[in-house]
Image (tube, rainbow, N blue to C red; front, top):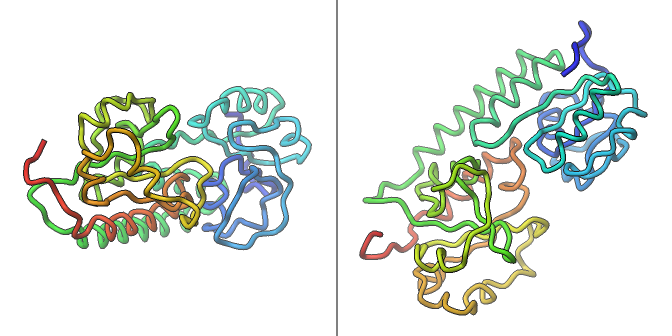
Length: 274
């Protein structure tokens, strides 16, 4: 990361949806001159120039906007190449490493410091932390957590690992990711392992599925060969998650956590724990 200016940045490019959301939350939406494509912000902002999807940012397009600050995250595939290219052009890049649920708070504060809104960021961090504490009081007490399988892609099967905010959210909501035994944020998994673990809940959050589940049919999951024996299928506990609340590590993760707590409340459990 190149040396930062003593003046707050007036022209900012957000290369990830989460960084754009944080900037809007901190009242810096008018400073956005460029954003990643596929952006769905809950806050209206001024028109910006698209600079490519988060995993394929165009460094030259970013440089042409003459930004004072570029925000990216090396957790996206290919991001390190784009970050290096932008830094080589003399751009000041804030590189966020966002993997765990708590990274949301540290990211928010880091962005606040960079844009000269440290006090406002601290206020939002405290507000979000307090909301998380309130949500934790809503989690029903149970003898054991629900066994959960979260599917990030169906062909091949990809699930979340230990270094994933989704795994953290499942735990906070009263569940346990059955496949959090690997360090990675996500990884491919054999179908046989899914059947062996016999999850009580299946969560679907495919890339690009969006927030409207009306075109997605749980029966497609129920009809998978061999899946009829799974507790989640027998209990009809298969759910499509709103992508904007779970797939993007921004402020709306708190809404996702509240959604998950409500979803888990009262779900059936096997009589025998595994």
